[in-house]
Image (tube, rainbow, N blue to C red):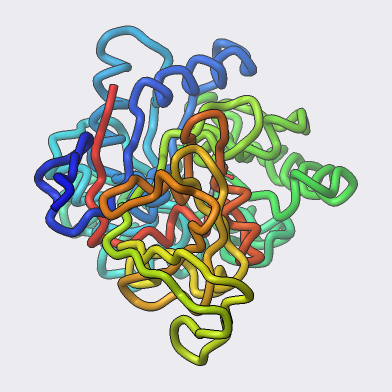
Length: 379
Ligand SMILES: Cc1ncc(COP(=O)(O)O)c(C=O)c1O
């Protein structure tokens, strides 16, 4: 029997893993910092398990970089109390903003206990925050979200004044930030400008002029396309994960060939028999399926790297395994490394390219990598 050499992670009995390169996170913070005025703070968005990269480790790494004086995050952004709690349990003390609307409103007390800053998106939310603060005799701070055209959550620009007024007079709550979110900063400068103008209209409110309220709007797309909306802070995910040009990818998704067979011309592969061999073929089974986050839409479309060469995913992607055509790769054998996202030899399949095989975006491709895939961190 051929011995298998598991160079990366000998602990893995099921050979699929995601490598996350923490040195590239440091580099990306540096590159981002160079694009911003020195007074602009950075909020690092680590929601959805840090876009699939592992929120706890990345939040810890960002804190470490900051403590050591490198460019890093001033704030972290999560989507829920649960995500914030996980970061606090990991020992991270960095200020955390819960993005989006915090419903049910009775979770404000839990957010306060964990020292997480909630977002308020309505007058009702502001009232409930104030009640929570009065209960524990503290003025709980929140950021106010303005919906300037994303159409998701937020107070409309017309109704912003009454919420600002309520919060400035409240004894149980106070504003420490105000923000909006762009819907298409990468592709629609005219609409983005309209969103900025609506936001600037809200910012004229006298209650927001005390200099202590953090104003923020830009995501990766708005910064990289120079939309001129950096204000006091930017909220960045994609660029820091290396999912935008000019930044270094952090994540590679790798697995191994677990089975090899010869297929006669005309024989079929996988559910629904959507692949039929056109020649005598060498087919490899890879330990990666939609249960790991390889989207089923990659069936008969996706490509992977084996021995530095491209080969096609053939047949339907199944829950735990997928098949590839390695007829033209003589080096392919049981135990060979298969790269689904990342570099091998001279070639690379970026998250964006892998996402394109299933008609989606890089963000979804990395977020889809499921919990059962171990993350292996490297420096
Ligand atoms: C409210 C909010 N701000 C900022 C971001 C970061 O966006 P990006 O990852 O494109 O930088 C997100 C991401 O979805 C978001 O929902």
